[in-house]
Image (cartoon, rainbow, N blue to C red; front, side):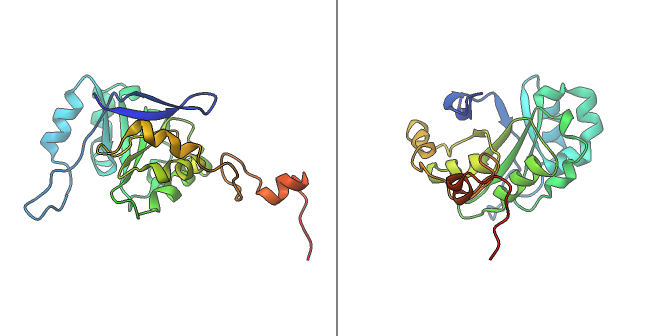
Length: 194
């Protein structure tokens, strides 16, 4: 079984066993991925374990999946060009939402995570999957991710160090809304005037 990093209640990262199967499209002859076939979706839906379905499969088969599977064993993963707002009103039916990073340099998943946490008020587990590397982990945590499937060819124990390499955060975000200059001055809501 593969391992992931998850944040505990106290926000401390730990390595745990991953119990989720990510249903991915098969590659064609040109190494291009398409949609997951209906047969693959049906086979995954019939499984008793936890399955992450791609958003397009969730949208096309939602009613059948909900009738067949427990919500806590059913999740959705978003590709970089998927709109996270498509899950509005459905997040309580999912045990996990994951965001795929197909390549290290594609940062659209950070925005998707932030939208899920702020605009949609998603409180459940939010996982980064795909080309997830040590250098990204701290920034991902700050955008709302709380579990991380580090790329399989990387050392997951070494990746834990990615959370402690930066000791001071300048910008405000989900984990610390106030920017450093406001924290340093002890100013919470006062607007500065030029």
